[in-house]
Image (cartoon, rainbow, N blue to C red; front, side, top):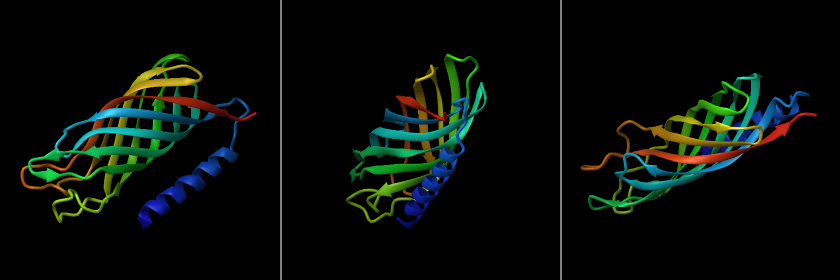
Length: 187
């Protein structure tokens, strides 16, 4: 939990610094959105819902860099005799986006660390501890205009074999859809 507080503090400080470096061309923006997805593979979770917050700077008209965070909630499911607990993901990630045209198709990814939060145990009927987090990856492809982004995403936290139980691999990942609204910053 202490790492989570530090990650949130770091993201807040970084965002505050980014907000103070505004551009008159409105190349800086905050992206606020939501997503929903089906867990893949689905040994211990069934689906996920989440919210996203990101800061993006258009380095060039076709290339954006920034930071991303948010919260995704994975709903646990019963499997192989285990009553799997829900788990949350709080990412601290770098955001990279490529926009071939001013409006239309785009693609990109978020790369960083995903903190796993929630119950300390993998399942309510086991004593195995849940992993604390791992490498975070969220590639997406979608459509954008000046105000909105609509996308298909894959979100995954790589935890290795931590949290695996006999007959069940521990996975935190989903494939889903989402949207975000762009709030321009600057003059």
